[in-house]
Each structure stands twice: as C-alpha cells, then as structure tokens.
Image: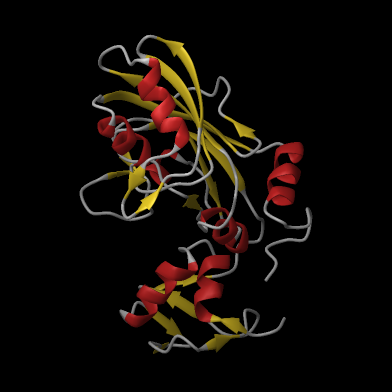
Length: 243
C-alpha cells in the first residue's frame, strides 16, 4: 500500500475528518512509531507504521460504513465536545464514523455518518450541489408573502441565499428544500420575515430519506441508497474510500 498523508490516514481510520485531523496533528495528539508528529506533510505506510491517537492505536477501517440516523433534539453533531450529548453516542458499532454536515442542537431528523473520508469531504464541501429537505414549524401563521420572500432568496451573512423550493403544509408549517447550508440558515431566514421556528426536522439529504426511522434510531444505507449517494458525489460505487 502506498504511503498516505497522516491526516488522510486518520480520516480513513474513522478518527475524524481530515481538517480535524490537521488540528490534532498540530496539537501533538498523534504519534507515528512512538514519536509525536506535528508536521502536516508527514506520510505513513498503513501496513508497516504504527499510528496512535492520544495513546490509542488506530488503523484504517476494514469496512466502509454509510449510516442514516434520526437525530433527537438536544444532541450535538460532533464526535467530541465536552459536556454535550453526541450523535455518535447513539451508535452501537465498533467502527468510528463521523457526521456529514451539521444539524444544530435544537433540530432533529436525518443525519448521515460515514468513515468514507473522501465522500465526507465531497458532501460537506459548499460547492457540492445536493438537496436537503426540511419540515419547518413556526409559532404563528405565516403569510404567503413571507414564504415567497424566502423562496426567492434574501441577504444573509454578506451574501444572498440561493432560491429555495417551499411548499406550505399548514398555516404554521411548511416544507423547504435547500441546495446550500449556511449556519442556522432556515432559522435566520424565518427570523428575517418576522417569525420564529418552533420545530425543524430534516427529512432528506440528496437521495436519502428519513422515512419512518424512529427518533434516536439508526440504520445502514441500502445498496441502492449507497449507489445513488456515491453517484451524486461523483464517486464510483464499489471503489472503496478512494483518494
């Protein structure tokens, strides 16, 4: 096996994302063959080098996992955050996986997790043009004009949001489909039109639907779901973790 950069090795092992791996390397959390490494350009041979993370030996995952989780309210989308309940704690698997994208602490619904580092990077990158669908409830009836304003796009965080698909469900509930993911975007948009979100649930990411998965439960993606997700990300199904 060819040598790979240390941060990529950590990602392939399911320890963290590559970007987070760079932070851990700089912080001195990673050692190669017993020697602490802080250089980001360091390469390792997965077959012969011994890599440890905070004293624990880590190895590339033997199997690539793709998981759908129904995130409950009150959990944070993180692999480590002191004093918080973590989404990864809801999984009872030996492999380390990490969340794709984010759902804020107060939101619920579909969250994807994987140890496929390259796929995680593609799905998380702002340039990846995939749909995310949400069901949103607000505190008081929302007029058609407010929904239309959000659908057209509005100034936010120094830029204009992209047009969104919005479908009314009831006077206080609507469905929204986005192709971007600014921080707390839907909550900010709703506030801009004078309303307040009381419930926010993600029900779809690309071709993956939440369906009737109970809150707090998880499942492996089906072969068809994996194939569709990899194809949407420009990956070849069955090609492993890739480069």
